[in-house]
Length: 419
Image: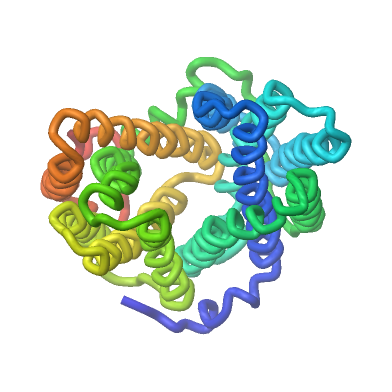
């Protein structure tokens, strides 16, 4: 399952990747810090829960509506330039948040407008940023590079809000200022990154080119299989959306217990990603992927049936670890099975699936919990995940038999393992 080939001894040897790694994680920490400050500041101004929901809405709308045009741009223009332009726009919006907060000239409309601008920047940045990574490291090292990036991302999700909360004592302007500095660091590192990308001959943005990523995914069984598996597994496994109910009504714990429950999946994912960053997946990647998604489902079932805090924490820890294994394999397969001139559009479609499944997964869990109770809703989600794994192993036999990330030839249209 693991390898220690000379080229995989240390990611530190890949200088371009390290620039990318530090840049991406600087912006991730900055964004997480900014997010917690935005929520606190808006609620302090309005005291309305609706405005907290609007923060998510003004970020979700551009991420979905602009995904396909963003993917087209990522395949037609220099990706590093797209990322640096987007990061400069995001930096400007955060800097304005800092200036307006420090001077006292800010209100909820202004905050939401600037968060919307940041959402637009991130919508165009994501497919270009995702498409850059395969060109920075050899294919055999890509899973470890993705795991290393993911581990830092998990660390940012855990430490970023905590650091932002501590700095908020000095005021939201202080948080935004530090966030802006981190974005400036990310922009500087990204602009100096050595990235050789020759965009193909530019094509006009037509419906055919915009939806080329959808067509490509539909007719590549490996790519379609892993992306759709991710969609339905996340859609059904939305247990984390119901954590407040489990903490209060089932586990009979307080806010401190809820904090532990929320942290457990991230800790599991972080530790697993650190391990994956130092160990290459080289054999039986298909069975490992399906086993990990099945483990995610089993962990969800255990969490649903648990009535003690320690067992619930163990289940959520395992849930995060299993999800990280499958995420790294799925991400590497999608990137390596996609030609460079299509990676932007495929990443954009993948982003739509991820954002939609996360939001709809929470909605589905809430609807089921309202109708059947939190325990039954979570139990159904875990069982449903296992059913999805069973169906996908049947519908996509090439994925079930997959041994390596790059060695298996993949059929196009007319393949036997399509739905």
